[in-house]
Image (cartoon, rainbow over all chains, first blue to last red; front, side):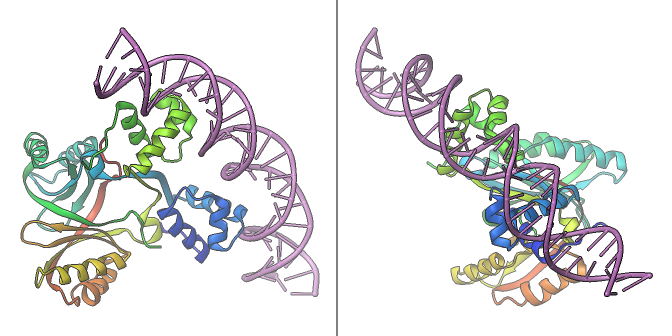
Amino acid sequence: MNTFNLDPVDRKILRILQEQADISHAALAEAVGASAASCWRRIKALDTGGVLGKTVRLVNPEMVGRGLNVFCHVRMKSHDPVARRSFERFVESHEEVLECYSMSGEWDYLLRVVVADVADYERLLMHGILTHDAVANSSSHFALKSVKYSTAVPV
Amino acid sequence: MNTFNLDPVDRKILRILQEQADISHAALAEAVGASAASCWRRIKALDTGGVLGKTVRLVNPEMVGRGLNVFCHVRMKSHDPVARRSFERFVESHEEVLECYSMSGEWDYLLRVVVADVADYERLLMHGILTHDAVANSSSHFALKSVKYSTAVPV
DNA sequence: ACGAATATGAAATACCCTCATCAACTGATA
DNA sequence: TATCAGTTGATGAGGGTATTTCATATTCGT
């Protein structure tokens, strides 16, 4: 069993922390209807229990010249573990690849890449992804607009 | 002009804050080679300038029973703005849809959905997405594993 | 090169947070 | 009913932190 037993107050805490992690314990306590000490203990338990992860600050991609989202499907030459690990290391080491999923179906991986423009993506695709030993071929899809982006998992 | 003029210290600050937003100004100052007061002022400027967004706490999806990622391509019946807005409101109001992009190519939208299991997804698809007035059809792809998930945009 | 505008580091202050302690409360069990 | 383990809220000490102020340094346009 991997999941964590959450009571309603835990869920409220998680919902708030996922949207506004810089809230004070006092304000959080008021919002969830508990004492600050209790909130503190619960957060600590959720933390050590592996439910809560990092606290991160979000950055507006457009404001730093990374406004273009590209989704890249990748098919591997072979499915052997060595090739997969090699590709996954490649993904891990490239900071413009924000997300990567191993997929069911006709494609092996799906990547979300943030780049400045199409030329920027062309560089990554031609000199990075497609030249990787383990990659057979790929298919790219460009986002016209980001309609929704949330990091908050429903709890 | 949409982008923000960032100097090397700003970039260092952004890189750190995107990975560890709960760092103290003193520790941040040491890491970037500036004073705490200067860091504080830079963060404030990045904040009001719209570069920095929310501070959020990440939650391990598996630990809260949302371990399955599904990608859903959606094609619209029509491309008129009213239908689009209606669908985008639908997406916005469904918390299990974490990401949604308006796409170029044969599909109009790409959604990332987090659900507990396939049955859970079936419910959303059949009683939510596919019954939406503006939706013509859709295609779903299941992630076997999350290889990389980062919120840190390269700066 | 000059002055104006702006950014800087150090210091000071008031605030908040972390964490421990304690007594009261809850719920399950025998 | 008595007991026991776990949880709660209140409280307080202590240490650390955010934020302001101010004098100095740096940058920028002309």
